[in-house]
Amino acid sequence: MKTALVTGATGGIGKLLVEGLVEKGYLVIAVGRSRERLKGLKSLGNVEYIVADFRDRNSPERISGALRELGIGKLDLLINNAGFALRKPLLGHSGDDLEGVFRVNAVAPIELTRELLPFLGSGSTVVFVISGVAFVNVPEIPSYCAAKGALHYLAVNLEKELLDRGIHVMRVYPKQVKTGFWNGKVPKGSIEPEEVARAVFNGLEKGKREVFVPGYLKLVKYLPNWPVFTYRFKY
Image (tube, rainbow, N blue to C red):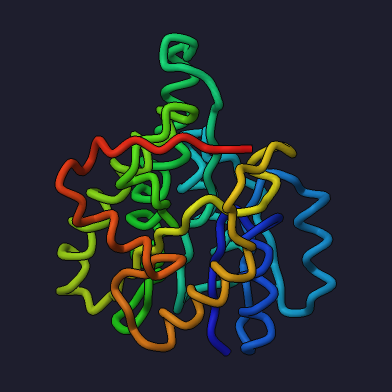
């Protein structure tokens, strides 16, 4: 049986990925902040869980230790999906706000991947769920855009470093998605999380290096004024 670890597993895209992986016969290690919601995933079948908050810089070490306690010695798939945004101008951010946004969205996925390298052998895959805002500036969520832009470059370079280990990296760039991420104020034009989950599974099956959801979003990469193209959400 193959084993996958999914962060941000209790809602939206993450929960759908957990459900889909269980259906595909994986043992899934679900990682999230809410113990109660993680326990609810156990009803799916082959699911174990680890409670972790990526704002805590010790969370990667805690996760690797928990894997060993669960008797997990090998991961076939790691999906870095956890993330959050703050809807306020940069001048309204405290230092802790900025550090939290960058830690969860950019630093933690890289640190977790590095920490779990002993579990990730040749032939394994690491997925980074980034965002289309890595290529588009959205003034409503400026720190999130910057953090996802940072994750994009970090993941591109990490991909090259992992080649020698035989570890495949796939980067995923969805546009805004209808999930609890928005706390009830969902922008117009948002896509369903099921569309993202399907695109992830399709990308994994085809061994893709990058996946844009919807596919036309890839065109944003080639805009002449990238990366300062500005888009404002409508409601």
